[in-house]
Length: 252
Ligand SMILES: [Zn+2]
Image (cartoon, rainbow, N blue to C red; front, side, top):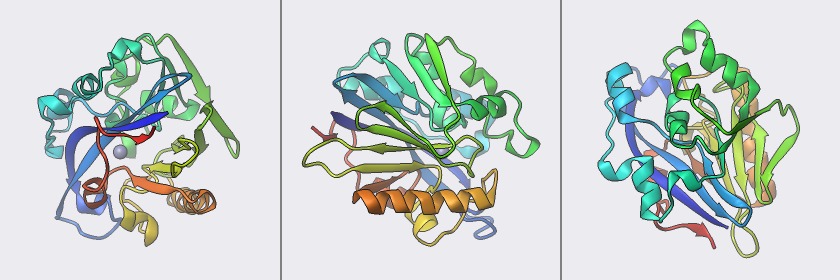
């Protein structure tokens, strides 16, 4: 399999939302990316990024940047893939920067946590910024709603989901094992925006349950250590600059 990281532009938040109770009043600009996997069993998207027009309209203070090249369509086109060819879409969770382009894939089977659907449709009062049901309530060929608990879920051989709540209620992390000779790839997604979050156990200010989030951090670290995996952070400006981006890829 080939694993592509699709550069989707940047967003901006007050830094205290990335480092709980610290760094108020400092701007934190961070990258957003989605993952595309060309797998022998199908073409798979993991998260679908954000839509600049939506952010400009709903959350203009996040000051999105997204060039024409950084839309999900353009990123897929770069590697010769049409949205209608995607077979499976996994959403780690249903915050807008992870699901806003679900609408591009009406022919795909979707996989995400059952509880994320509830929070996307009826967010708790403190999480209204992150969710918007119109981003989720789009045509889908089929949906598989997961309630994993301690179980792991194999999307296809080599791509595994684990439940890692805390940032959001039904949050999933993704482990990709591209096969012989390739280092396993661990995507905590929003268990840790940055290396600093995970390595120093600094919780993000944005969370649904801080104790769950801390446990999810330990869980991901244990998985990465056990597998000898490389951890890819979801919103880390420094680490992101070192990643191989599409049309380059991991695995092979
Ligand atoms: Zn995110």
